[in-house]
Amino acid sequence: MKRFSRLSPQTLAVIAAGAVVAILVLSWGFWKFYQGRASVPPPVAAQQVIENPSGFRMCNATSGVVEAAFGYRENLTWISEGWWSIPSGQCMKVYARPLTQRFYFYFARGSKSPSPVAETGPASPTVWEGRYVFCILPKAFKIEGDGDCEARGYQTQGFRDVDVGPNNTNSAITFRDPN
Image 1 (cartoon, rainbow, N blue to C red):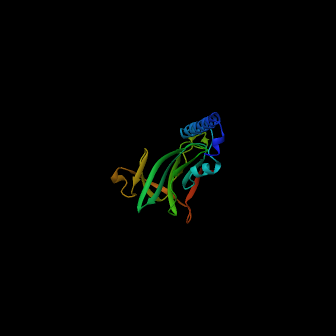
Image 2 (image 1 turned 90 degrees about the vertical axis):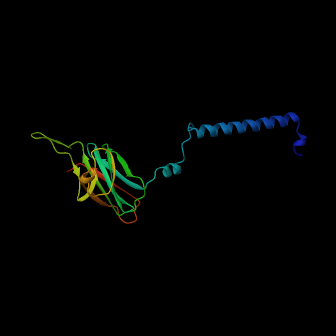
Image 3 (image 1 turned 45 degrees about the horizontal axis):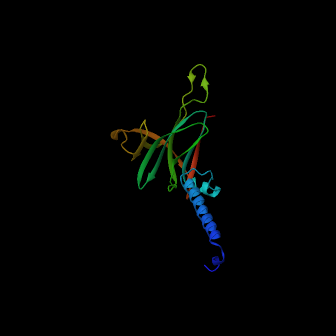
């Protein structure tokens, strides 16, 4: 306090008022930022952290929409999930956790044929299916178990496998129109 004893009471009042104003301005700015109204974007490093690269993505390079289902094993239980409607030129993350298995499975169908045939009408939609059986439904689903599908009220569908390799935490597939 000895240093400030040389200052007049009016000067000390101005300094105190300035400090109060600075605190109020900083508090208001923080409150606006907290409410999400601040126009300051997060730094690039923070943006990269927000988008978790782990998981499985499906990309659509066809000329139409692709509807896809995904199969995987979790805690010794087979699980199938669907449907993801993936627009042309888009990707979707269908599994957002780090991959822990070497093989994952998918079934997909294109909703639009790539080219119509003049005499017989449009070509059949493209279907990506395989020999690994999972249970599905025509509407959105998440089904535990891959056996006795019909007895449990589901449909049986063959899925393709995809080898994501050892120790990979993320992977992607791309659907393409047939040649």
